[in-house]
Image (tube, rainbow, N blue to C red; front, side, top):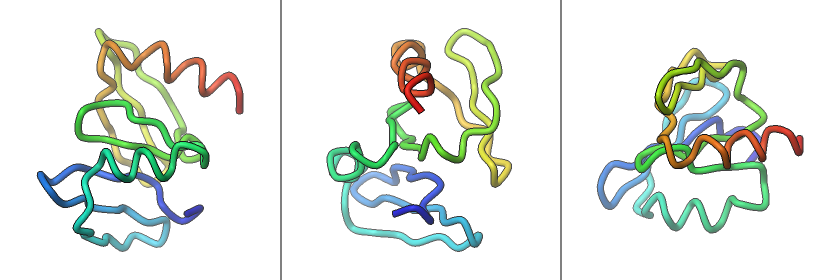
Length: 92
């Protein structure tokens, strides 16, 4: 679990992006991963993205904004998810 940087929805599949640069495609929905990983510092920041809070390096302001992850990924944050993201980051 600690090696997962982020998860991205691909319809009925989910792509897992790992710390070592590898990707895995799994036949589970992002919603299933969200439920299984919520106790491990993962948060849904967008309809298509679930991220490990431990790998967030920067937040860039915008309407919803963007997060930059340790692997260089730049992901959008949905406007409705912004406050939840800030609360979770404060608790780390």
